[in-house]
Image (cartoon, rainbow, N blue to C red; front, side):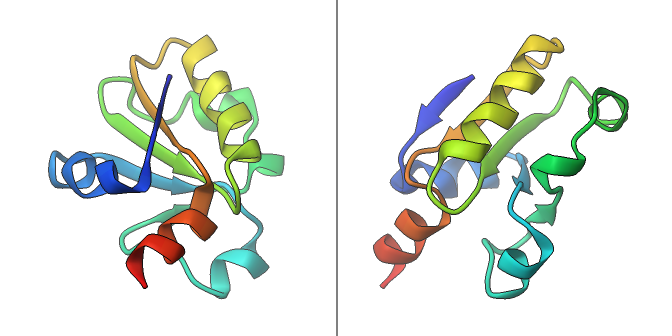
Length: 98
């Protein structure tokens, strides 16, 4: 797992990363990074994670970076090689976009 800053998102997404938003459905409905898939951390069982393609690159984020960091560590532990966590989460991304 690697922590990245919001400035690095564009390049990672352009290179085909799967963007996972690990916030709640309510948080997701209030706004998200374009193309993101909502996979709430509370529902990320090992069984659900194992359905993901370990060969792909994943960019994870939450509101401020804590939950996504834990989720990224889970993916890392389960053998995913290209996992990125957005430092500062969605709030930081919104701030950089405005």
